Image 1 (cartoon, rainbow, N blue to C red):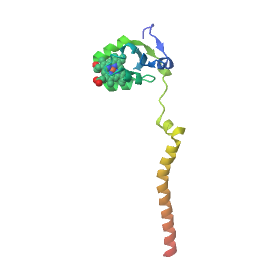
Image 2 (image 1 turned 120 degrees about the horizontal axis):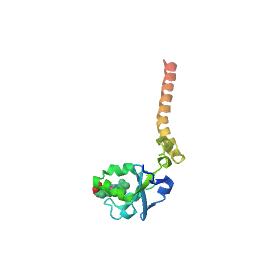
Image 3 (image 1 turned 120 degrees about the vertical axis):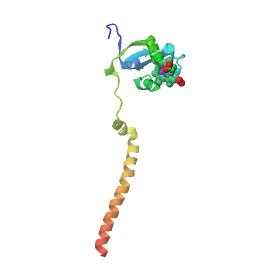
Image 4 (image 1 turned 60 degrees about the vertical axis):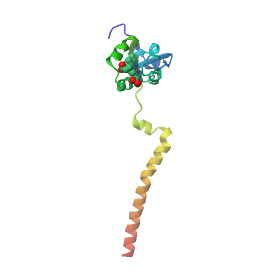
Length: 133
Ligand code: HEM
C-alpha cells in the first residue's frame, strides 16, 4: 500500500449515502461514485442502495465486465479500515431479537403442542390399559 493512501473509517464513509453524495465500499476500497450516478448502466439507485455496508458481494454478483473494473479506478478515493466495518448480526442474534420474540414463542408452541398431546395420549393409553385388562 502506498504511503499516501487514504485510510477511511466506516462511519465516515457511511455518511455519504445520497444520490448527490455516494461512496461505496468494494473489496476493501472506497469509491466516490457521485459523478457516475447518472451514467451507471445499472442506475444510480442501485449504487445508493449498497451504501452503509460492504458492497463487495452485491457488486460481484452482477458480474461486472473488465471494462467496468477498469473504470472503477477513476472513482477510487481510499482504503476502508476493515476493523471499523460492523460485523453482521448472526442468525441467532436476529432470532432472539426482542422484536421477534412473539414469533419465536409461536414457533415453539407449534412444536410443543403436538408433543405434549402425544405424551398425554401415551400416558392415558398406558393408564387405561392397566385398568381394563
Ligand atoms: C465504481 C463502481 C461501479 C462501476 C464503475 C460500475 C460500472 C458498470 C458498468 C460499466 C456496467 C455495464 C455492464 C458491464 O460492463 O459490466 C454496469 C452494470 C451494472 N451494475 Fe455497475 N458499476 C459499479 C458499481 C455497481 C454496484 C455497487 C452495483 C450494485 C449491485 C452495480 C450494479 C450493476 C447492475 C445491476 C448492472 C447491470 C445493468 C444491466 O445490465 O441491466 N454496479 N456497472
